[in-house]
Length: 303
Image (tube, rainbow, N blue to C red; front, top):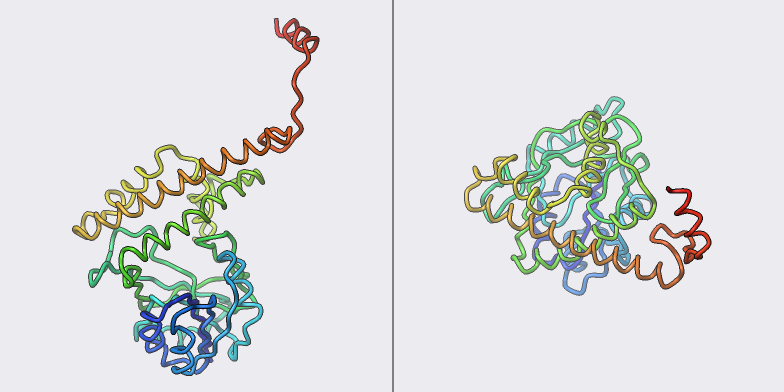
């Protein structure tokens, strides 16, 4: 009745625990980006089907998976290898697909852990769209993709447990170094395309995914973003109630934001330099040096 999609890349440490939390499904697909460890072997031992594809960016990778993986059932639950489905959530998933009504997708509430401590306050968002009809779902953005369902969305009881530091701090930093590069590319791409955001939708739209998209675009236009991110998580979200784990997590997220800022500035400088060398303005239009006659005429007109 429910298929499962697990995205992997060198997840031999976490995959077994993830698959063990999915015993309620008879159709598990491990969507692997050509792991060089034992990830595919572990998946096959647990009787999961393995599909491999080279990773390009998050939305393209996920959209390809939904369109090409042969799911046995009409509903798909998606998660990463460092996430676990709790028994309460598994029961809620089964109940939802038995009587979905007009819903084409469902959000779940995720618990992020620092070691064994639940970061109850310090995280940016707790809700993620993970159960859906694959033909009614698509993703957008190079990294931290926005889920775009084609129809109404419901919510599920129970928790999806996330262990982002299960492979150690070095792994988290390496992964977020990669994420920050994609975020910078996304920001530069949006600016080049003059993609607009809506202040109204950033705060007033009922669709949480659209709200998240426009809030991100607004956030990217703010000065001192790393400091704002820290204050948002540690003070605004009351991360201080999570103790030292909340402080450490807020500082890491602030550093991650700082990497995005630096990489975005670097891309902007490179784009401006390339445009100048090609005789273009930063917006991509031809740029000509002004003639003395034009300067003289425009100066007179200006006066």
